[in-house]
Image: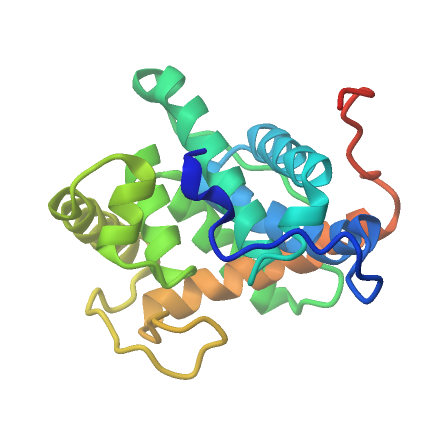
Length: 226
């Protein structure tokens, strides 16, 4: 990361009313893992990127926990890891079946819709998948996405248009972009396609959260490296 990686953060190690790293990890791991799976289309790559991001956060926790959004810092680190690794296998990409734990509270219809959205997302080339997830789920602007992925805003727009057109055909929903509306993330669209992607993200979060609660993932270990 560049020199601005800790912009807006201070070292608050002297204070006690801040969240411990283990609590932060337990609270945020399922969400970050779900988002990484949607970005990468590969559960192993996703989990590797998430673990690396949390290891970085653990090493620098006094500063990271003082950021305006520690979750945002870890998410950005995870996305950069996936983007960096993706450049090595970009031209070898091919669609694969994604295996993830099923949501425990979802109805049959919700599971069917989520799986359909995940399969459709998995049919997209890596760059298109990254852009549509970052824009539709994270509410990131073209400029923000371009800066993070190292591409122009125009390329972001082109990839987003192609991704949405393909997903709309596969899911038989309207390709028209909606306006930002009732969403927890400012700027996130409320059109049918974005709603389908958010439903799949929530379904993933449920399944991965249950797996995490069962102890499938322990806290990250940096191997004793300081």
